[in-house]
Image (cartoon, rainbow, N blue to C red; front, side, top):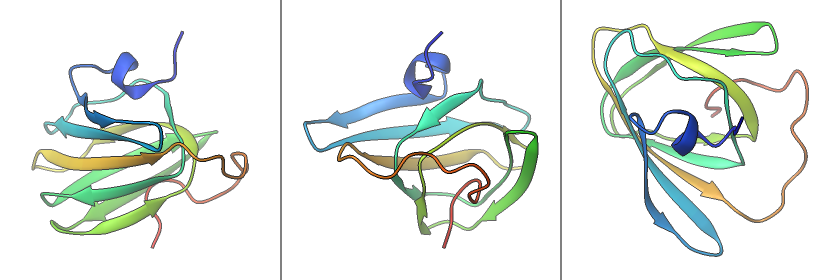
Length: 113
């Protein structure tokens, strides 16, 4: 089983650009949609609309409420998520291909500031 979000949830994630340095994913969902467990390397997320999600990883969960037009750093992680709001999610993820530190147990889930 793959942990690549474009393969675990191809109906939600779409690769829009990929080269030797980055991969850019477009993500769209609707209220109530859930993702299968998947992994992201270090990533910059840019929101195109406001949304609310619940992120699940390692027995923990956090709620994430973001506004349109935000850019957030998301440290490498494996998680699943659910749209718990009343608006669709629309965001771009710019995944970095350069090596970074390993996923750290207990690190922040979802987008950080």
